[in-house]
Length: 74
Image (cartoon, rainbow, N blue to C red; front, side, top):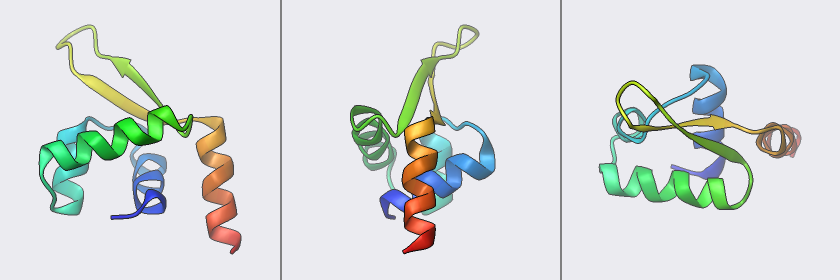
């Protein structure tokens, strides 16, 4: 699973929780959560708390869309 893979997934799904990312890529929850946190720290993904269940969910940011466009063009 690469940075591009996660950004593509978030673009297709609109938003996702870490468990959804883990299931999509066949990796552990901690690995997915850490990958998402790295993308948040890089400004490529936004993290929000779902007020209904308290889970974090993730959405690609404008900067993330720009980075994904770069990956697609190179």
